[in-house]
Length: 247
Length: 247
Image (cartoon, rainbow over the protein chains, first blue to last red):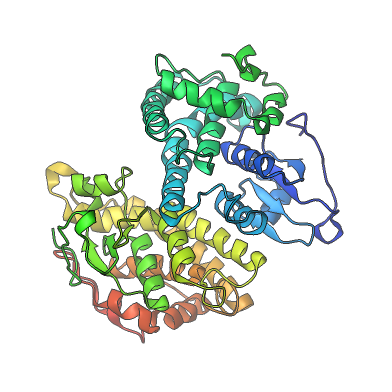
């Protein structure tokens, strides 16, 4: 299945891999989006391989028995599976102290990782995962395999939780400049990746939270975001606002 | 509430903290157990502060808005909240390449982190969390707050999942010597921490999985494990086998 415009189906086994590392991803997975933003910010060239993790295909399970994306495969076969391993592998192999997106001193790095846990854990469970299931996966799956109309009650609860999380985002942005401090960190990329998935699925509403909206506009305007804004998932078109920077 | 024999209630605010770092923990939380094993393996002196995260007390929420343990507080006030931040903070500030418990080269470190995601995610959700709720927290909570008798159906499902995870553990131990390779890594400490929580709650059964049992005996026999085996949670005594090394 072809998910995105950035379609590079690499069929070679690991040992025959080419010169570029490969990111196995699903366009609307917020963790994969964060990794793509990270790679773009760091300028790490790579190939994208589309996956449909909900189908639990053998190819993906062979790379990651958990059946989850992202999976990162180096040209020498080195494999990092899952958002935790991929994040820290890229940190360890592609950044220096001065370029790290985790921050510059231990207290900031711990705080950024705390925020990553928050967005990867609580935000994902309360907002991204239910929205992605109801408005995304259910529309991609055939009816007999769990496809169908979204559950509006689930979406309403997710929208309430989103408002609370946007309050947190707005407060952090006002206090610190950006979420993990004055300079860009993975906390910004993680939160913006989640919001961009919601935006693609027409489930992002800021209401009157200007601080959160301003912060998101700032991250969304970065050049690293452009490839994400060009993504189009087959049978799942985004709303017009999705690619707009002056929303 | 006093949970364990290792009881050091430090009431000082951060800026008056003493010379030792503090680990805020709950004795039967598998993530806290892994951190304690890590600190013992690395020889990092610290104080323990008992927490009861299910009560969502202000003191803990002030340290970690997610309300979760472990939380690590350095004498200078540097704070790492949640298992991800604590793990990587200790890795970055307390180990060298030669002593790292994540492994020696990028491929191994990525594999160890994949296994940590597996045990922290899937194993926790399918086994540790339901067992801890049904056989632990429910017995510590008053009836009006969710306390009561364990749900045997939940426990049966968890036991089935445990058998599958033990198959994985046994296979890895047979193939590699230990879970993340021939030498000790955080993958061993994570898995053993989960199993030791089950053992305390009398929910650990190896059936005929000798490979998994041998691996667990090996990790449980390490000196780093001794403080855990001395833990006793009030109103929740462990079975006799809990502290035995020749089980």
